[in-house]
Image (cartoon, rainbow, N blue to C red; front, side, top):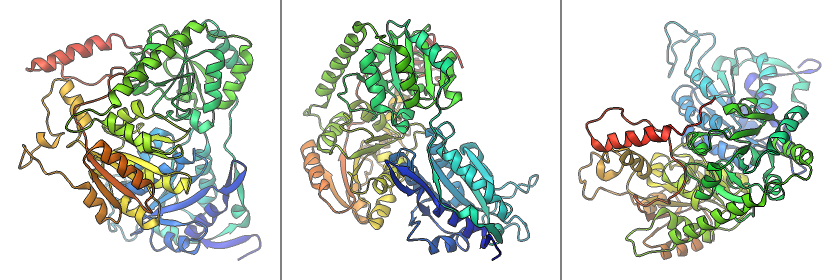
Length: 619
């Protein structure tokens, strides 16, 4: 060691740097990096694990069962912490790394922070080709880690130990930037991890990071005020950025004070409770008829913290063609979508400036009266759909209502791809802010249980994650039931077994194609009349969880009461209807064959062509 420096391997220096990064949450100083999810192997076991082992009491390492799922758990943790704390995920070379690409896509689509550290092949190439190396004849510097370029906000490969001096601070800054937030990937070649270097001591000084709040320009606020004051039928769409800004209650109060109905996106759901007086439910394809009715008559739309995905906009058919948009967003790219008037800035800061500049302006009261009537009608319909019937198996709506009834206000419901996102977004009545997580930006099957493991870590004793998962997603990724039992992070998992991929079967048959390869009965199985169904309760029990199989909604309610008091992850399974869905919401632009011998497909194509004529054109 020389004056002002410390000699460490690159891997040791990387880990020491992570341990000295901090942030503040509600006035409390906490580590910025709360832990590491790791599966060690060829590429990260001999150097990076050596460094992590030395600090395991300061920066805990948790062993996952699958590289994708442990990164999804890291993403769930970051979401639960509203992007204020970050988890790390590390893998070996080769398939360990590529297994994690899907999770990186989830983080990128949802604008969520996670630090991905993957082993890489030797920079010196002396032993090439090494185990698990994929060789590119015309570009020998390409490795499988280049596949992360498309799904990372920040990407780097360290080819000299000194490079982390600049790379790590840039990676952290990216993950904490509201406009650029997403996964940061760093490839770590094996021969570079082992090298020692004299690092300056200043690099390891404790650093307190804050999340910047970008203030919008006065000109943009003035233009937004001028436009909004012309509105007779405005509406607000609250996106995920509202939650991450901590602006949920401020936006809802703005909506209430100004008399503007407020809808939410799927990512934004949970910013306010279900019964907030300005709230009219989720927006778009999986939204309420109340939000749809308000959107169809809107003249000015204030979109806050949303990227305006097609499920929010009904593939841009939900609004009048002459509706004007005010997009408040920290990201310039999102703020300028679809010819919107942009307000580039943090949601909370922008709302404060907009509110101050509006003076005593209020929307005509007829608008909110219209919204309240539509929302009351919607809730009456929900009450009817959620009431138990004599059907052989319950609908998703009925199952969700029972879970919602038993859930404590502090419990967080977690769901993802398949039929449950739409059903949950429509049917779940949020009892407390920030207790709803539906991964639908990437619509990733398998997020549910893995993401809930991250939520359980983040929540501690403050409530329990309740997972709503279909049999299809459960079969795709369930091993973190075992992880949660091993690590002592409890969740409650409700498996709705509808015999396959129910919602994609609905889309397939709804577009005129006979049921094919989605439901088990329509797949190539030995017994189509009675295909084998997994006993999910026994399967979960084999992984150490407590479990019950429920035969009725009354059974489910009793089992949920029991599950609230258990000491470990508890899995409840129940058959559900694959054909009954909650009505409402906008239409969706999908590909339908332009020519077909089937009349049902031709009819679906005609319906799509009529629907597409309503589309708002723009970029």
